[in-house]
Image 1 (cartoon, one colour):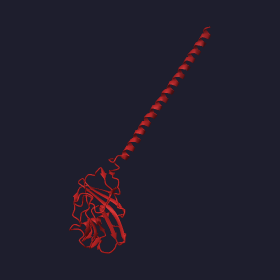
Image 2 (cartoon, rainbow, N blue to C red):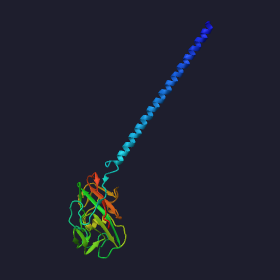
Image 3 (tube, rainbow, N blue to C red):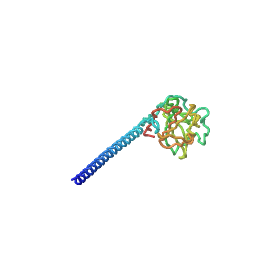
Image 4 (cartoon, one colour):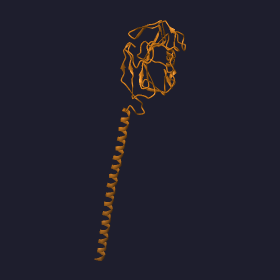
Length: 242
């Protein structure tokens, strides 16, 4: 009896221990799975937050991607875009009929004709690029140069900021040549008499190269900013005839 009781007790203890071990394993497995689920949920939440943040940053004009650019604004021939800051034509140190940077004031009919747009923002205000830069003895109707004694190959017909490149051939003409014809300075600290840090964009992309060496291409949008960069920078739609 006692032997059988010992055997029975031993079996009971073993059985009880087995049940306890099994229960412990079940609890451990459940706890581990629950912990894994919590970790997975936390990881998912972090990933979602990062994705939302990245998405928000891509839409935020004040992120490292730079300022926001406007939708293309229409241009009408003869209008003045920006505050009238400069007199029409070239300054006394600019083109007065003499050859400037290898560019003559020409009377021949050009075979190469493209257009670019220049925006100048200084001291928080957009400044109009004047009419008749690079034009000798202009004849003006409704704020637009319709005829002249001669034209430099880089010139303006009005104060819209459109630069006309009209030349005998398709050489690489530069922004520096245009400013030399205009007779105004162009450096990284001085643009047309406004001094300070100069930030440049070409076709809505920041440009860090030599401003004077920047070459014109068809419908190129050049923006020069002296001082603080505004939240929104204007860009323009060229007239259909251009």
